[in-house]
Image 1 (tube, rainbow, N blue to C red):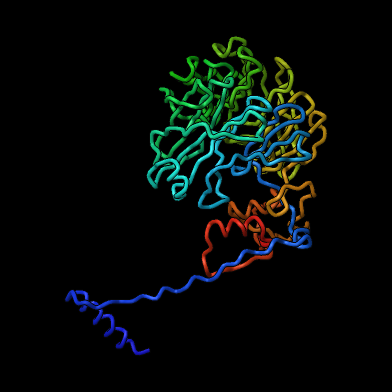
Image 2 (image 1 turned 120 degrees about the vertical axis):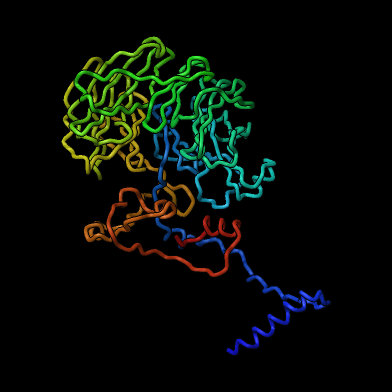
Length: 471
C-alpha cells in the first residue's frame, strides 16, 4: 500500500477543518449484522446437554424437610429434604453480566417469611434510572416474602453511606421477628449497620461498626455479629445502637500462643445459647464450646476438643447444635463428612487422623439429632441418621432448568488419574463443573462451544445462556 496517498488525504482533511471551510464529511455506518432469534432446542438437543450441580454458597435447613440454598444469583427452596428444588429467586433488575452474583444476604424467619438482599451493577442503566442514582452507585435492595418465596416485594433500598463503594465481603441480613431486623454492609473502605422496626420499609444507621460476616438476633434487643479481620465476636443489647466486642478466656488446655477464631452463636431461645471458639497454634489446635443461660451476659466453658492438627483451619471448625449434642465436622478431601459429637460437659482428645493438607471444611445445618445438611466444597449432602450415611442433594440443572436427573460425570476416573483437569477455573467455568471433580491439576476441558466476532446485546446473550446447547 502506498501510504503517501493516505497521509495526503488526512493532511488535507485536517487543513480543511483548521481553515473552517465548508467541507462536509459523509460517514456511511457499517450495517450491524442481522440477528435472528435462535430456534428453541429440540428434545434431542436438550437430552444431550449435560446435567451439572449448582455451586451452593449459602444454605439453611429450616426443619426436617424444608430448606433453602443460594448460589449467589439463584435462590432455591426444597420441601422434601433436597430431592426436588424450586427456584424462588425474586425478580431483580438485570445485571450487565447475568451470571454475576447479586444475592448478598438471605434470611428466613420461618418456612414462609423471608428476606433477600440483592445488589445492582453500576453499569446497569435500567437500575440506575429506576433508583435515581448516579452511574457509579452500587445499590442494595431488600425484598421480602410471606409465602415461602412464591411472591416477593421489594420493600426498600438500603441507604449506604458510601454508595459509590463496591460491596466487599457482601452484606448480611437478620430479623428477630417480622418487624425488627438489621442489615450489615461491608464496603470497600468501611462498613455500616442499619436497623428497622417496620419490617424493612425504613432504616436508620446505628452507631455499631459494620463488621458482621453474619448475624443472629435472639430478640429485638439482642444482636450478635461475627466478623472483622480475625473473626471476632460482637454484641449489642440495645437493638444495635451500641456494639461491643466480646472475648472469653481460653481453656487451660489451649497453648498460650493460640489465636482464637469465633463462630456465630447458636441460640435455642433468647436466653440459652452456644458459641464455638477455635484455637490455632503452631503446636496444635483445639475447639471449645461456651454456653450462656442469661442471653449472653455471661458465658461458661462447656465442652472441649483438643489435639487437632496444628493450623488446620483458618476460619473456625464448623459445628452446630443438634438437640443436646455438639456436632463437629472433620472431613478429608474427596470423602463424606465425619461427624464427632460431644455431650454436655464432655472433654476429649480428637480422634481425627487427617493432616492439614487434606482437611476439608463442611458447614452444617441440622433440624434435629438425625436430619441435617452438610455443605462440602459447594456440594450439598443430606443425612437422616445422624451422619452415619449421606446422600448428595445438590440442586441440578440441565442447561438452565432444574432437573432431578443424575449429575453427568464431566471427567472420568482415568482422566483424573492422568491429570486431565484444569488447574484454575473461572467463576463461569466452576458453574459448569461438578465440585467433586475440581482438583488442582493440569489438563484441558473439551466441550462444544462457539465463537462470534460481533458483540451481542445483553438480552441476546441472555437468550444464548438460557437456550443454547453450548457451554
